[in-house]
Image 1 (tube, rainbow, N blue to C red):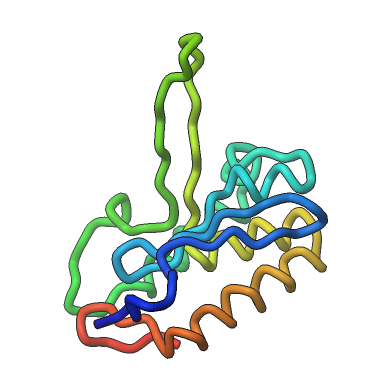
Image 2 (image 1 turned 135 degrees about the vertical axis):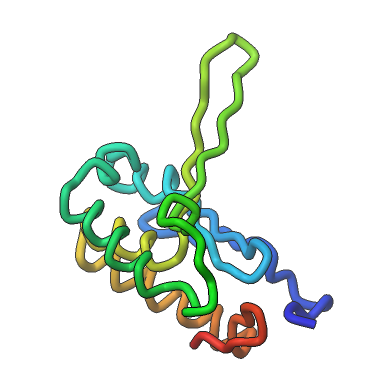
Length: 140
């Protein structure tokens, strides 16, 4: 069993400079609510995702992220997901969830100290659960 049922590891809400972040454990991955990261420095995930160096990073990282036996297309590789819903007054709300490495890159893009803090926070979570298991492979 990946998660100890006595410890709540499915979701964490750490605070940075008074802003509450959201970190989730989805399946076998750690994902971070990118909207909460952006609020710390008044930025949006959409702005970050349009940067040429970020697009190149996602492309390069995607090429080497998957186990060689997997032959999914680049478009199917996981970097982030978007949850869309409507508020009661009809406004579309989009919530971006970044995979842990992209989340740290976003935080670092906003502020180096913030990126280092988020990296160490996620690293502590990984140390606490021991490892992330993905199709019988261990990723530290």
